[in-house]
Length: 460
Image (tube, rainbow, N blue to C red; front, side, top):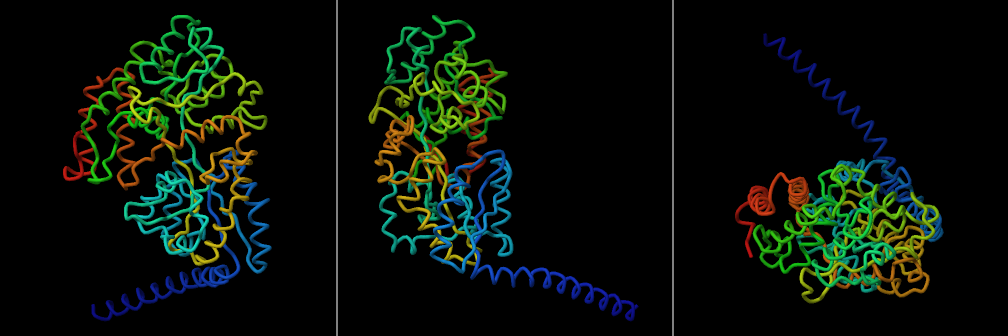
């Protein structure tokens, strides 16, 4: 028995040695390669596939990388795009960032994931590097908030941002008797315009589109629910007390507004809006066909209508207006918006942090950021780029940039994705009449309390 145990032990030891050698060989070759890459190569990971981020890819290949490699002739910049959908991108990036063998040197982070990845230890704080970089002062203050995690440190340099507002068909509103340019001052003004469309135009014209289902995910939470909520006096999260507001008039009124839209037949058919392709239906089909009067959504929809977009529409920018979202009753500052955007971050396990920072600084200059926005069609995070004539000439960008003055960002705390999922479910249940707005508000309180804990919630 003792002899058998030794044999067994020796066998196990040999197996372990074999595994270690195998891993060592694998990692050794990778490490040697990585060691070499640490000096001679940096890699950049971002989401690609199906035309996604084509402008970003072109900008990197045609503008930034040639400049960087000219300044650093011994360094090769390698693009490592992930061809996955948005949800899978976040999961895949989280896995990559956990190991020195798989972490890229630069990763593009959706700003709402910055806190989560920073809290997990996946990202490198940039505060010390930014202290010696005067270009940071050119970034809009509000936009900076998107890359500051709960620990107060900076984990990325924003390269774009966005804003949301009310797209409207000028001709349809005129036919409905609504004054154009349309400048709603309250939620009641929105409902009044949608009602006028319903009463005066054919039934196949949708008065008002708001993303309202679980299938449209974050678009429902951010572009509908929070665009309304942040127009009340009650935000989603109290940053001073660091608690979630789970009971407020604003929460209940937001659910009530959404319910009113569908109770009064001002919204689209549920089969359309609860579909994961709802946004495509609204902005690539209904709006170009003159079948959608008002849509609550983001500036990026302009990309659909450009010559090289998914639904080229040469008349789009003569046909449409883009109005600021009013606060609930016109309270100061009068308008509201929500912003997201993307940032260049350095993974904590990057082997080439110094080179990565040099690349980020070069990519973030005024000249290069302007080139990116002209190719990619997003809003700039830089105040000086926003004043450039070429930038202002982009259709609707002057309006969208002005919305940034009163914009808000999603709470940069690690439970936000869970809370957002609750919102999406409750909004769908309200619009499909499964629950009342009052029941939605009560369920929100219960479910968010369960997620974050009783000591991290408050009421207003």
